[in-house]
Amino acid sequence: MRSLYLAGSIYVAFSAFVVLMASQQSSPLVTSHAPVSVVPYDGPAGAWFSAVKPYCNALEAETRLRSMPPPDTKDGAGYRASCLALAGKIDAARATIRELPRGDRAYAAWIVFNVGHPVADAGDDLSAGPMMRLVVEFWPENYMAMYHAGVAEYGIGEHELAEKHLQQFLEMYEVDDGFRRNALSVLQQLQHR
Image 1 (spheres, one colour):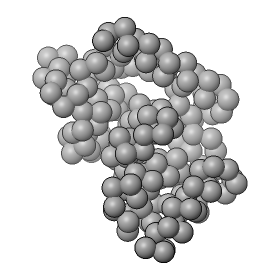
Image 2: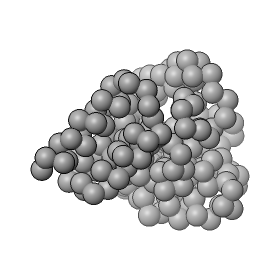
Image 3: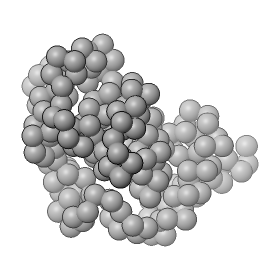
């Protein structure tokens, strides 16, 4: 099992590096059409997260976080929220982000996005959806989180939220690609239900 985790971690890190290099985006906060960057886990908080990530599940996350807390920084809070979100403990992840000063919350949401985005881009919007919705709550300018949240909401029958998030995505993202076409297709299906 650990070898599968290691292989998966290497794949995610490599994918994140490729996306980062392709986007050449240095700022974690995007404007309307700037590429969204995904970076590998970095610094002391990133190293902490790499060590605890295998325990970021519903059964072990809170116990591990108590026995091995993250660094007391905004990065640490972002990775703590990510661990809780991976464990399905979205309310606890939200509380962690809310404990930060208002100006640091979008940054913590950026970290949560970086952790959950590879899952969404791999096609598992339903699993990543709650994390993306959390990201949108604190970082509404993140068009990719808006897209993934909307697609996930559609998949679980939350049609009003899906429509709202996909409309917002389309207002921010004008590139004619698969993301935009899929959002338009889902919205069309919502209108014909």
